[in-house]
Length: 153
Image (tube, rainbow, N blue to C red; front, side, top):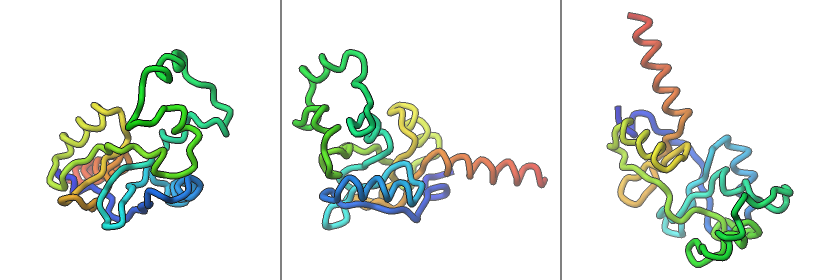
């Protein structure tokens, strides 16, 4: 089975300059785990997902153990991690290196990527364009179809 056999083809996207509140609302309205972030030409430049919202000061979440050292030493794409947690626009919070697969990737390859990166979905590309999303729900749906067919035989 390939990505194009199981991918979700109806999904919402967002622009990098959009307010963070728009991304939160879109995630809630659509039930997506993450939103592809597309530039003006429609090319994928990032993804903003549920995990990007976990350590927000607005929620009163404390910084993880050892965070002070990470804060002192690490920079992500030239930004301090702490700055990301206070930002109010999509481009400041999004992951700039989304995990992607080609539409002809096998389900096995998709699961390997999801396991390797500890993520719940991957973007499916045709060239530089996002044509689908494969997440856990799509994989479980494919499993259900297979089990139902075998039960019917």
